[in-house]
Image (tube, rainbow, N blue to C red; front, side, top):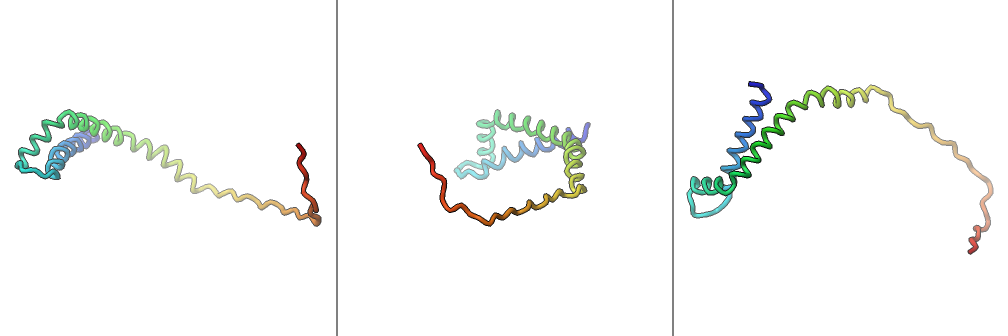
Length: 108
């Protein structure tokens, strides 16, 4: 089996385990833990199924895309460090010896 698919399936199994056990443990009720887990599973089995399928897809795709991003995108960013920075030259300051004595008037 392909390594990326195996990792995605393990992530999905972990998702199932945590999504079934953690919410009932956080709820307070008079039921036993096994009853709370069974009740939670019966109420949310469709959500858990969709979450599992999405986990498999997203983990698998992210593992497949990572080498491409690393080679193409991150390689280009690291090559930017080798370029010398462009420092703009300061603009000359033009000083005038006379200042206007009156402000221009605006006519309607």
